[in-house]
Image (cartoon, rainbow, N blue to C red):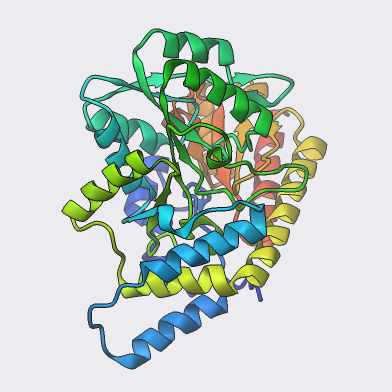
Length: 392
């Protein structure tokens, strides 16, 4: 069953989010509570630990690959959770989701060509695009009634221009927390079809969906020119440092092309720990994950209610999915340096600056809330106190 007991401090100190040097470099102090990295502060599901312990107890690590069971487990999970029918033979295994994106950018675009991203968006997207010698083209999301929406008019103009060779979609969207509706995705696909633009869909947060929203994979829609990145257990099972990525496509031509590349570079298999962990997660982790999702939904609801009641001057965007929540502190009327000082020195919060995601306004920040509620409540009490001091 899901546990909220944090792991031992001496282990925590080795995690990137607690790295003293990085915290000091980014926030000017190591005396901050880290909510800046998108992982969880909870022990993983016991079936996963048991599977890996069994592997260790063998004391033997001979060559061992079982992608067939991995793909079957992912397909079964998606059928049960999303009623999504995936053919286990249509997967390609890669070292990770970011590796997958990097490979797909290089495989299906040329240097100098444009890859469209919908900003503000996960900052690694831009890095992967530009480090490959491609151009990152921003299709900036619009805010409509305190909710982010796609700028479809701008999207079509950008595809029509011929500068965009690939759309890199984030669904659910990190950091703004949107779960794109089927209607929105259908409209996006209809435009992409007109210009035969390939769509790569990063769906790593696909299982972290809150009440009132429904996840739709791009693979469900009638467009052959898509590759979907799904199946990584990193986010929903807390396996960030030992998980693979899995690319899926119904299009055999696209699939064979990327598979040939991964095979040629010997990137098409994982290590035994990753394999055992992934199979255990998808075959035996449903009860744990259900409890985890219930817990984080309760935490999300508490944050939304607290902010509306106690700090209404801070705009809180309600996440429909992901364990990230997006804030706009413009209502405090602070200069950028003043806001940074308030958050890091007074409230002792290590949030992710919105500028990392391509947000031009320095008042925006992302927070990861996959942490014990008591810890979050203490942090928000400090935030309320800090804001109260500047307003008096």
